[in-house]
Length: 330
Ligand SMILES: Cc1cc2nc3c(=O)[nH]c(=O)nc-3n(C[C@H](O)[C@H](O)[C@H](O)COP(=O)(O)O)c2cc1C
Image: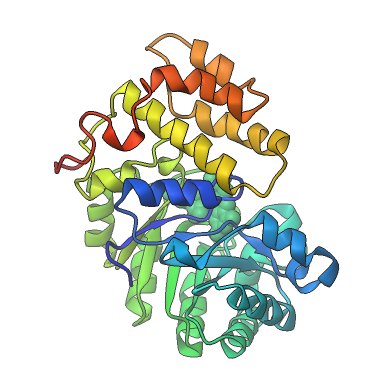
């Protein structure tokens, strides 16, 4: 387990190197995770270089898990060896992704419907690498097939170091509410650390999850988007509530700067991804959309900087008024 026991969720198209660094710079996040990486793309010599570049990570990032998906034990084992050779300090196995292109090939959440295959994948990865291996699961396939508990038992017996439970079934996607009772059942079933995930937006909810389920850590996904100071607020490093606009703009500006520094993508492609990310920082006065409208049309990093610079009042984002004062929770 890491301290603090707060985890930034793996999120395809969002939790890239720039966003992970941003959360770290703001503080309060214990561990981060890459987006899911295809084991097949890594194992194949022709696509390996591109896959590694796309999912850029660096051991210097601090506690970091590199997440792999796939259904074939030997391919997952080889992919794990490759990322560990590249410096991955922890390998996480994705057993929660429900998008068709992943589950059609038997990976992601599909493995929760086949405990034998899922365990074979876990065992192969554990045998292949000597770094900690963790798994991220959903509650199961559907309300009629809640397999997280038997699977967690098998994974723990095989030797995984921790398990994250997103308390929704694959069938639910992101609909409905997370049902934390499954986290509690997994906690009761295994002796390894369990990280609870699903619908957390503030520290009170995180504490409630811990009280109700006995989980040892919390993972946050969507609530951190356009809101990467959430972890710092939980740690009392940033004042509670919505930070003032210049602070939000400065963080957005830093998000852009880190993207420019770390993206392996051509500027045009990276900027397209960034448009949506920057527009989440709500940089307009209430009732207006002028800044947002401009941000969703940027064509270059320079254009983004032109918009954000004046809003951030050209202050270093770390020197924004109110930042880093010890404080209450949100
Ligand atoms: C845009 C997006 C991309 C995601 N990509 C991944 C992924 O690559 N791997 C994974 O295990 N989960 C992925 N997830 C699921 C999250 O990690 C997390 O389990 C889910 O969002 C529930 O947590 P939340 O309620 O805090 O958002 C993704 C979620 C979102 C919103």
